[in-house]
Image 1 (cartoon, rainbow, N blue to C red):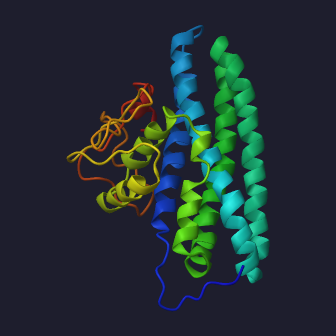
Image 2: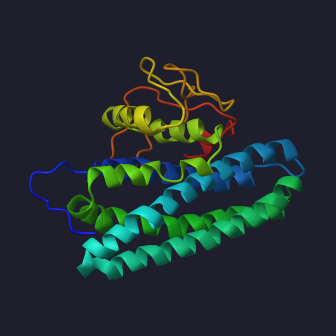
Image 3: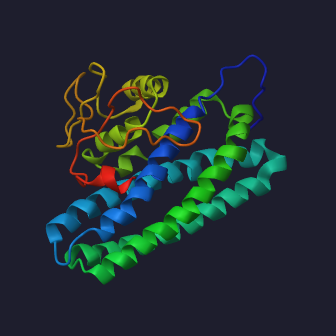
Length: 262
């Protein structure tokens, strides 16, 4: 591998990373309250919340595995003065992975027998994960993305977002994409649509102002991607604009998810 010359070349769109990170900040902030709100013995409600938790955890795993296998090896070679920083990022991924596994182990038992004590423990585990993850995301945005602009080619950047999509189910992929669009500003939303046409396994395109989503795992050609409900508007990360109108997602997400965010 050789360093990429910065002269007169197309640059990767690092804004895509901010858009993806926004999903994890939003959902891992909302989830502890949703877990704690499940009534004692309400297995139906616990299943809905657990399904959403699994979706977000799987999306995080897909995102991080792409960085582990695509991004870090390239930066280790090309950004030699910053290799210690890359090693820090890899260590942080390890911390996130271990906390994710702890959540998955407890989640299974809680879903079968949702008690207040079990829910509190699960919520605390999610908060522990969020604490480590948010520190990692902030460092990545501040220190790694400038290195990406200098050292990573556009086609390599695209491979990062392509990587790992087969680890999510056909049902999960459109829901995760809808979550990405939820707080995306118009420019970012259009960029996501354009990227999805070439690299998403489901052949979907935008339809009108909002978006529409498949919840059955099958995506209708050209029109259907994520169905809308009015949740979570105006909660973009600091400095990131939010959509002027409702860009929302319908799935089996908890119906009081919006309240949990405020």
